[in-house]
Amino acid sequence: MMTSLSSCLPDIPIAFQDAALLSAFAHPDHLLFVGSRGFAHLSPSSILKSNGYRKRRKTFVNLTVTSHGSRGYLASKQKQQGLALIYVLLIFSIITVMASKILSTLWLETKAGAHYLEQVQARQYGLGGEQYASLVLEQDFQKDQDSGRQVDFTGEQWSTPVVDESLEEGRIIIVIRDAASGINLNGLTSRKENEEGMKTALSRLLVNHGLDHSLLAKIQDWQDEDQRTRPSGGEDDTYLLNEPPYRTAGSELVSLSELALLEAVTVDDLAAVLPLLSTLPENSALNINTAPDEVLLSLSERMSSTQVDAILDARKEDGISGFSELSAITELAAVLPELKHKRLGYFTRYFQVFIKASYRDADFYLRSLMYRHEDGRTQVVEREMGYNEIWPELEKELGDG
Ligand SMILES: [Ca+2]
Ligand SMILES: [Ca+2]
Image 1 (cartoon, rainbow, N blue to C red):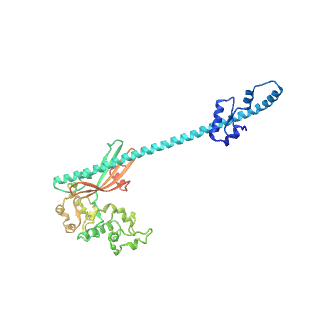
Image 2: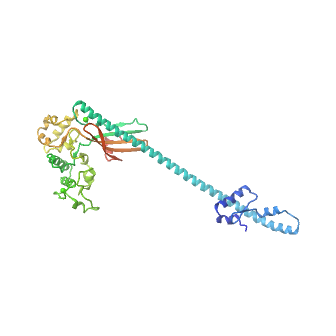
Image 3: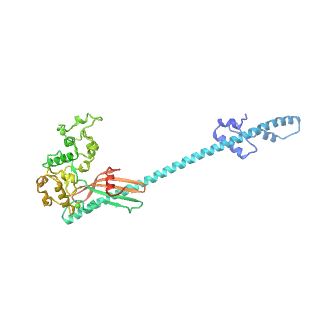
């Protein structure tokens, strides 16, 4: 059975619809018809033409019938041409949308690939910066060895920030800080003779910053292995009531962020005092050459700003390399007996290295804790990648940003 193009198109596979359209383009004067199974047929007029024309009645009747059929066929042909145009436009629209989608996907993938490469390059710059810091610290150790005076103070080369703009399409900032310049919270629970000294220093530091000295007991209970609660302290039974419940660490602090878990303490409360604290292994001493004024002030009840200034002045040029040099500072005579029992140091084993490496639009932030061995070799013992809250302060200090 012969079926018109318009009625058969919705029911047959798209390939056959295309076949009909292609046939129409190939023979504009002899439109083909497509059957329900997709087979092409010649138009009625074409069939008659192929049969020949004879001026016989039978043939005339056939011609009359054919004449009526031709008018219908012409109308149908115009309709089909309109439909063909619509289908052509539809196909072009689909192709346009597909091409647009492909281009958009390609653009996004190219952009993502480029950004990934930028990040990889920035990371390599950052790790190179870490190597540079390691080299600087080893050279400092060698220099101290050569001079026979092992001391680490802020006048040495390692303490000078590096801002290098000479990198290809990038830059790097390297800031090395002494990690032993704050009061070490680890070791507060030890039974060593100088333990009491640093506890009172920490207590004074907390009070000077408007914090309750009971925070000291909370820190100690957090670290000790027993479950005996100190006055104003807190053990597991305190923290298990929290939502979600948790237990005390029962070990040294690994990060200052642990303080935010203590009872009745918030990060905002601690913001001012955190830069003055550290969480180094228990045997790490406070380096008197890099300790901030506020930490020096907390070392003794009798320490005044005059005595603090005397220490700052004495360490400015060459640092203080031992207790004998500290004793030579006349202003400290009254507090020396107390300082003698403090866990003080004059050089350091731990350094914090802050690195910001940029390549094109990518920034890579790195904080590395370096340990310098007794023979001067340095080793990365802790590495934290990502933005650190210290950067606004560092960039302000460097006049960068
Ligand atoms: Ca040094
Ligand atoms: Ca306890």
